[in-house]
Image (cartoon, rainbow, N blue to C red):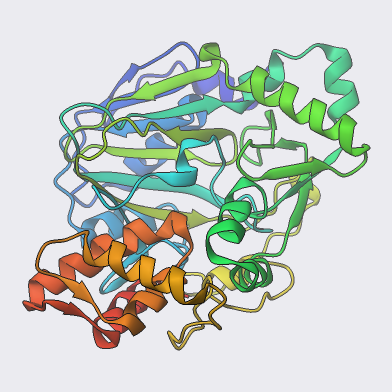
Length: 405
């Protein structure tokens, strides 16, 4: 099938050079400086190459937080803070840090950012602050090519089905196991499941893709559970083949920008205990994923600096953070005195010279396990900055304020 975009895809670009990275998707853009005020023509060309290659990479970009944000704003409105820690002064900027305390967790499963919301992210722009000497690559997959490789009969069967997207899959079960039922209930109230088409059409290019991921898709609504499970597993095996992939080796000051509407990605957690720090800004989409985007109402978020995450649902969810309420107070303790003592001992053994008060340890224990390592990295960093040897409620309040609502 040919689209209007195809006629311009071979045209040379005036503001950068393009080097494809794989036969499926992905390209490096060289000869462009993202720290400068780019002309509108350059922004238009980046969008054009993004539509063609779906994920683009820039090397040696010495962006600070302000320039990172300024670049992202050229493509839309940033999304507000969520569960990932934000940067002080830049609540729309997510700080993703991994070290001996924090592992990648759920990011090692393929996913499309924020598909568990009615209005998922349109683009994401991720920059590398510090990377390990080896390891820590990211893989993207082209879900349009995965769709195109299916037989016409399978395409006919799938087109029109719908799928539930939810954090209550493996991600949620980890929270349930590690933090208990209260944390689970809070998480699900904050992020109720949403339904999207299994096959969606890109609103700019008109190309179709499979819109289901191993991390966040739980069931196909029109099928019985065994049928749904088998079809989803087949689609994941099919879509994540190497023929549809692009793998990127990070370097310091590398930047990746991807179209979240037609790709999925996953991190490679092969660098422990080395240090890796990244910062990411998602751009909100003003349309829900749809079979027919022209029939989907365009949502006006207004003239805002960023869109709060609760506005990305059609129905407003109750806000909570794991087992910790917005005021930072711990939920009721269901773990027992022995578990409390074991947690306190574990935390006090992690970083020489820094100990936790019992109350602070209880609060840390209420942070879902997949986010706890990242929180601990921040806790220890702030404690060292302030010269504190005891982690108390005051220090935790500062860390929780950074983690957004």
